[in-house]
Image (cartoon, rainbow, N blue to C red; front, top):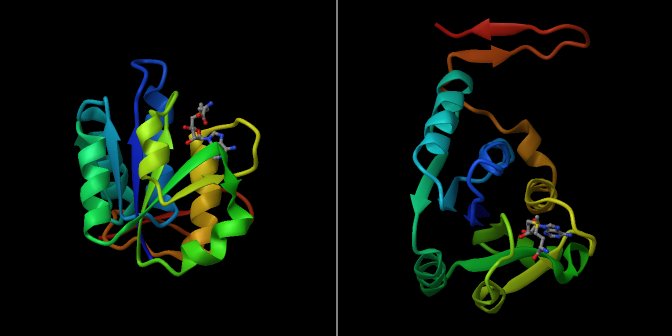
Length: 175
Ligand code: SAM
């Protein structure tokens, strides 16, 4: 399954770190791309700089304005839309159906998500029915979609590679 993430909204200054973290989690846990509204190019630049160091140049951050247009054309092309919300149905009940899809657009919110997102979504999915965070929700959702295999994903092309060790930090530079 190919996954793109759409994050709707961004509260200026207050959300800066969260927005970058949403993009980094999308990248690290197997999504191909994140679309974001309400931000400038700086988030895309900092994720690109992470990718230069740690690999995976294919991951893309796209700043967009018209999230509804994007979602509608995604559906027109045959992709499915999963919106993560505490008001949705529990992930356990839909995981099987999600895993049969080929292209998924995962919508997460920064603040209150407009009603149209609930209507456009093929699935409104709760990662438990308590309020928490779009970053946590996205991480767990991607884990269910990729059945844990995303943690072994390779990120070719970076300048640095971690050599996993039980203690300390070992990083190898790639010529
Ligand atoms: N009351 C808001 C709502 O509509 O879900 C909470 C906003 S929360 C700060 C930001 C985002 O985190 C939400 O838009 C949703 O994508 C995600 N989120 C928070 N709790 C969630 C949960 N239990 N299940 C799925 N997604 C959740």
